[in-house]
Length: 103
Image (cartoon, rainbow, N blue to C red; front, top):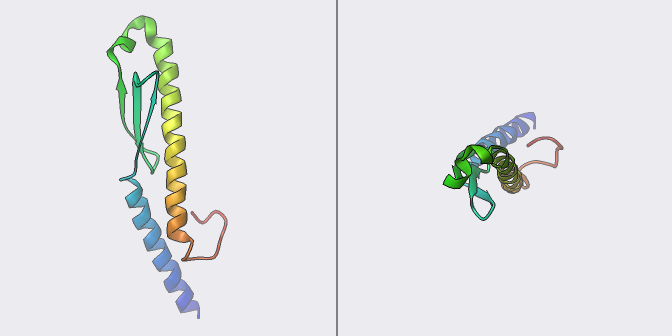
């Protein structure tokens, strides 16, 4: 009985690790100011790239650029977290009882 539970926990841990690797391939892109700034992240909440339009690279646009980078990055990370959570729920819903904080 305990052996079965340990085996199920081991299998669940393996599936969760596989799912986390899969999240690297789920790509989210957020943009602001009609695409002047684009932030690309994956569902593991890692920023993959940031693109900035040339006109924003002028010294007089520094504050605006920083604000837009913050907004675009936060949007990308929020969406990445939401997609990651959905994917992890798919993986864990049939494996284990609903233990809060497991994933």
